[in-house]
Amino acid sequence: MNIALVIPVYNEATTIANVIDRARRHLEWVIVVDDGSTDGTEEQLQGFPITVLRHSHNQGKAASLWQGMTFALERQANAVITLDADGQHCPEDIPRLVAASQQHPGKLIIAARLGRRAQVPGLRRFAQGMANFWISWAAGYPIQDTQSGFRLYPAEVLRKVTAARDRQHGFVFESEILIEAARQGCYPVAVAIEAIYHRQARTSYYRPLIDTLRIIRMVAWKLASRGFYLQGLLRSTGILACHELSVQEKPRAEKGSP
Image (cartoon, rainbow, N blue to C red):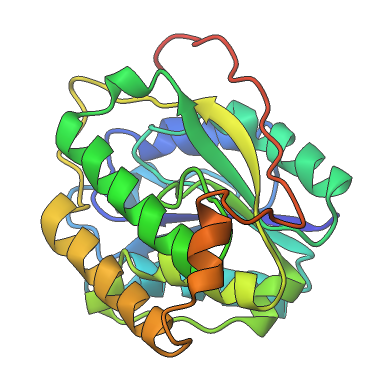
């Protein structure tokens, strides 16, 4: 498979070099989209044999992801893996996503943070739970981690789906694409990973209240367009059986800080 790794970056000077170094041990084709960083991130990218796309000003995560995805698709990528730059994903899990894709061709693969959930701050855990409920309903399928940015997207899925990618929808894009993929009959497969939250990590750019409300608003429009999709609610909660089941792999033992 010709797989590209897309990493959206905004002010991640302290972590990005380590993430790239570890990721390139598993995938050579790395595309970094620098979304107008001002903290020295640009200097940290120098010396790596990677593709760097830059925004003159911050445009949001959705725009960065889509630019990287489009760049890869135009160069005949069969799949795109997305990975956050803040060190909360283990690049060492990349082969597990690739293996799951080979086992389930054409499926969107999500690295679901199911291990060590107690590490997740309470407010974020609540926000993730709310997002999981609403997005699973709209998708008509139980999705265990709708907010994980560590995913493998088959090229054919990206070519079929559309989702808002302006700055206001920065954290809505990844949720909407799950719903749109499900409408195309592509339900995600989950690969279980550890939830990693470093005590000294920077404050997340995800705002639990505002961004969760934006996601819920998007989902509400999706549901309204389908008459509130009662079948989807029943399927997402397990009351009505789904035709396909997510694959869960046992989370690996935690390895130490990246």
